[in-house]
Image 1 (cartoon, rainbow, N blue to C red):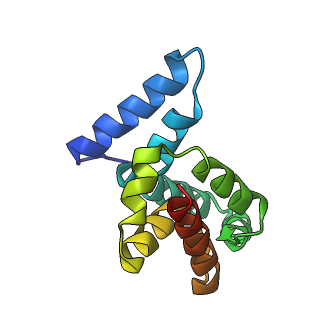
Image 2 (cartoon, rainbow, N blue to C red):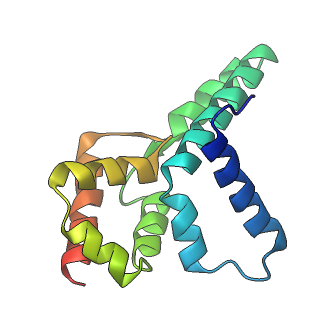
Length: 137
């Protein structure tokens, strides 16, 4: 895998350095990385690389099973983890989100769940939750 985008390289370096060298990784740090479109882009590339490797090594059944399980549901463990993490957003972030259009909230919600597959209904649930948190700020 080659990472040509210098900003993705910077984001990956920052993430890995934080994980490797920080005594404590707090919720602010995790939210910064989890909400980053650069980290999402890197995750999509890494996921594609893993999928290609599994396929090339003859593990197509394992790949298919993995991909079938890679689905976002708001009421799943992953959905609850994302919802809990959103509770730790800074006041300034929540204020900014409160001013967004519905489409901007949708883009943010989709970025939070990528590269998982999702149904629009599940994204709508996440969006409603995000708006509720932002408006309650």
